[in-house]
Length: 89
Image 1: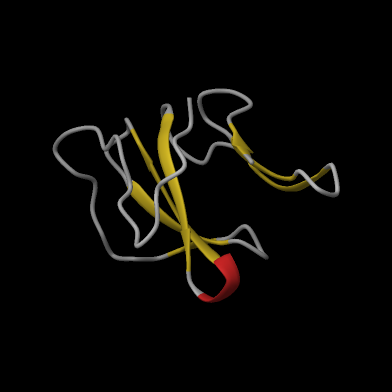
Image 2: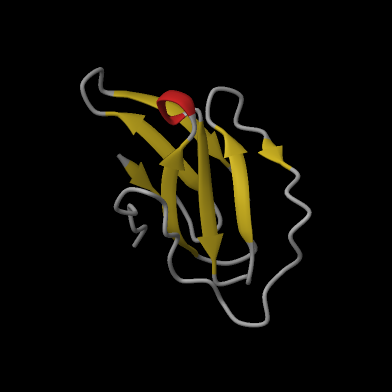
């Protein structure tokens, strides 16, 4: 499960274990509007936000990976992976 603690944070939870996996404080400079997992066993995920950025994260470490992508001209509302995105409210 994914939630936002504030409009700037992203938190990943393991619902079966009832534990917090990862907390990304200040992940975006505005509301995180979408999130989707990919890579081997979900070891990477994309987050997008109204700050006009799409960020690639390493799930095990919580570190942002440099994609070289500059901010977009408009807010980014959805991520479109091979699977259905998990939207962050």
